[in-house]
Image (tube, rainbow over the protein chains, first blue to last red):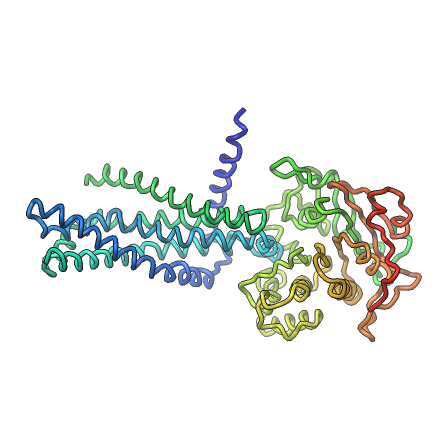
Length: 254
Length: 285
């Protein structure tokens, strides 16, 4: 009767098994340090342009709209406060993660998917390497290190974008804007702003790898895996973001 | 079954290298890829596995090395039961066999040299210092006559050359057992002949045991009746002593024939006789 549930439940089980194996491999030899470095470069540094652009424009548009709203109360001077809090707590982590997910969850899925359908994954197992150890764990570690760094860059560039709009449209003072930005932030905001991308990084890498390693049925299967990985990673990030937000609001009291 | 023992199989009666005992493989969607398959591959034998597409030939090879798991029955590789062995423990056994995948399965992000060196770097049992690795890789590529491609990438090579590189990668560790999955599929007759000649050369030079999956009867015929001549570098007729080649025919996951070439050719079963087309014009290159 519940046969239609079998597929999704098996998939969830497989996902947890993959997650477990990938995490266990962090402490297990052999460590593929070269692969981690390579992935940090291609997945992390490679995402820099897209993160810079997203950060800059999201900060700028936020300053534009917030400045207008605050103008009604004669509080344009507090634009920096609003921009900085929203960027560091919410928009920075979420937008960076979504952008990196769009670029990398799909990239990972298509790379691993192609390897799967051309039997390279089997060849790897036949030739003495655990594909999870060689392919999944390095990507997981690389994104876990790089995504919080990218988020910090995104936040900073966003604030800069906010200042440029603030200067051009609302004639904000440089020193006032930045001191507002700085003073608005509490430690809990910074912790939240860094913990979120760290958690989402696992979503991106593991979902990308999961769909890639499940790909079957030639190039069409790879295409399907790529789309599924991107959609699943993006939705998972948005859902997780709400729950993490709720937890932080409940336990940090702001 | 072993009425004509091969001169190359001097250790006969050979040890069992690979044994299937009532092995079935059933996939998640309830397709039965292998159905109660039993056979025993002895040292020095070459097994030609014939069968239509989807008859379970590839699954058989993958089950032999533990890439697929048997749902029923037991698989013994080098005398060890691998049916339920955890993946980590299988690596040591897999290091003793070489596999040629259907689409070559070369790592396309690595150069040819890195591809061939991969088992030497990653298989604990075959790991060697870097100064010995390069000559081993070169030797292996010389064996398939592709020494000049060391720094190229797989995408720069033709299909036949990729297949030869994959053979070089499979034999670089000098494994006693080799599994060839459709080595000639999708190749023109001349390239296909070159690949089969390499398989025969590997058998006669290193005395390896092999399972050759194919749907072309002439591949099996070549392996059965020709030998590699190290002096001329060509294939010569094997003569009366023949080679230690056994045929297996699969149909929908079941073993429907196992025996020597004469028995296969004498078989009247319509499915089996479809594979047996005596190639009149086949001659040594």
